[in-house]
Length: 241
Image (cartoon, rainbow, N blue to C red; front, side, top):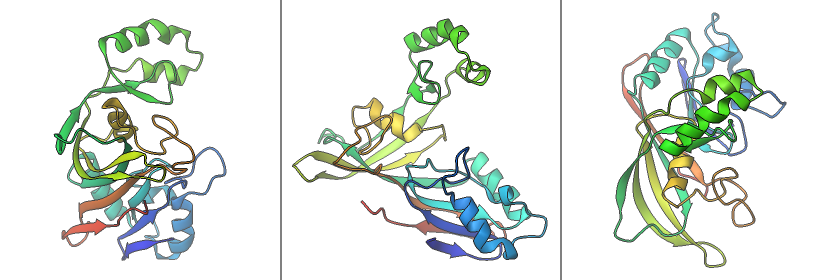
């Protein structure tokens, strides 16, 4: 466990890539389980393990995650994330050099479930929306039917080029800073792929292999108001890549 901050109200950690934020259906380790085992004697007596959950990172994403240690903190932080009062910044390595004339920009593309592979997401187009409506009846899983039928959701990501680099073998990559203005499933991964620069090591939407066996997406900075003191807290952690 790499603890970045800890007090009676919250604990902030640096989650490694490959570790779940919360327990899944299998027996893979999760940060929640590890933290609950570490701090269960410090929690508010009314707190259950799942009350510590505030937000999530994908298993393959590394970086800063905050957990609550009291009911008051849980309610305050969940409301802050829900109402977009927190700011999250990510750093990523994406495949290829982004056009040298472009140093920053906005990716404003709605997202929907991929009707062909419902666990995954895709940018919505008139064609994909039409196909989703036509094929949803063929899905066998009732849960996927319900999800695929939902309308696309507005999704916006700001990006800034930090550096254009080369990796072993001479491959071109661009180091970018990403700031999501919405919080959709796989948003940063799909948005980067949509502009022709998938995240290095992304096993679903990008290029995965010998070049990078971990996904190069890291939650590097979190701005949040402390639930007890009201102080504006900033937590930073640079990526390992």
